[in-house]
Length: 219
Image (cartoon, rainbow, N blue to C red; front, top):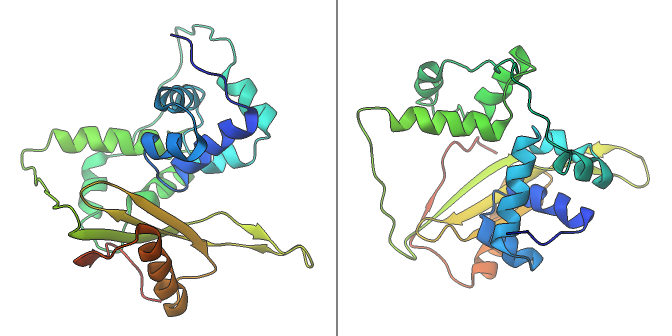
């Protein structure tokens, strides 16, 4: 079945919401007023085109993204495989509360520039975890927990000085529904941390029983 064709600007927005805000396909579709099948189609095309992380996508123009997503496919029988990390070592390092999967991917990418993008890196790690003998299943009750964390956000440019200013992306997710709120701030200091929570609860129009804060560094 043919998918509806998005504008080039909307195409880039689909990818931005997935890779920077970690929204679900349903949330992206609702935000942009498009179908979930269309969102899945564009994300699949991006992965097939090797656009597996926002850093690779952000530098491209809308026309550049369009050409990559809709480039004619030509079979190549002898494509070299991309180097994979030692996922047993990755799993072990993640036991350290100060280490995140994003950090380990960045280290792998520095040593292997031709390696997989973050989405594929995380996918293969997920497949590795499925093979482990012990599995911990987490069940979340509706309204009980909100998980909050920071990741690197987009950079902004001061219009007066031209200074490039990095931002921190605050993300809050309900455990049971995965309903998500995200916003960028200048830092992770106490004021930004507090007000991001206030705005998140205003957006949700409710507060959880408890907050879960994995891998946050101290302000």
